[in-house]
Image (cartoon, rainbow, N blue to C red; front, side):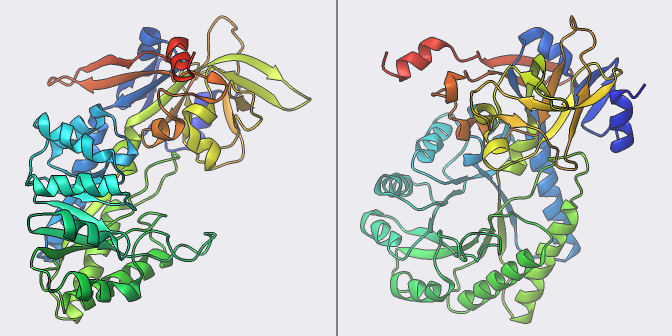
Length: 463
């Protein structure tokens, strides 16, 4: 008999640091998932908070190791991209680790104000303000600057944005400039819609910043949509960016910071192979070499990690409601949730996650398709990142429910799915559970939010 546990152990190097099985039950970061399911039921989303701090500390170690190895004289600063997950429990955990913040839109600034009022950040915290900015966003940034948030850095996205700050900011302030990087060849356009063209950057500095005593250029900002990956495309774009920094530094002595936007990837399959330390080493090595070649002082380095910070802390757990054979060979497991509404990246971007059975690991397995609850034909999940098919235990004992989990889902899914709003077919947002550890290492958990109810939906709809 081919058991599910045999399949997983033969296919992957299993167990892993994050996943193990005891008594046919899956553990995630040492947490018994069946215990969570028996306490709260399904569907549910969970966040394992210690993973957030672990990821941050790992990144700091990688970059600090690289700087020490290459005798790099600049400083490293870790920023969290709030857009990946705006939830308070995420920011509370992340800010335990002496980090700074990157914002992307207007309502991020009231969030920053709230964190300051609670004592989570200070006026010395770096607030890197990205994005194409409407007037209200610029107004909020201006108010931060005028209120003494001296390390609030609006990153200029176009040639006219600075005009607003020059008119309204009443204290000396610093700005950054985002470079419009070229996209990967597979994109439907050549150059990013965001940022300032390479050829316009020096002119922008010389005409609007250089001779103005109230503003100084602090930062040059670089962002790659595909993230930091070991590809010829990434290294080519990074080299081009470093050269522009060197050229600009030659006429702008106050420029001292390079922001390496675009984050590190997270594990979306058990075969994941990415050497974070190697990538940090290569980034620092390249910057140092090009600066030395041009007799340029090495810049401070900022990174903006969003998915990397919070992604691997998240999981979604479902029950299999029913088994359906729709023709001679296509077998469906219907879940008690929806991929479209609860894991929108799996639908909109064909994103794959680590998917594993939570229980019944010693049962036989078979090839199945997973179907969601909405009426949309696209509400399904039927392949893995490493293969075309997915396999789960057979439902031989109809009295024993089958539970499954999707892992490393902690970034973007709630905001893209419209958390707390109106979902396709009025599918409710699932309950959300926060998992932490006491000082003695024992697991604790609490309910952050109940499953969305009909009353909240009807109110939003005006009934």
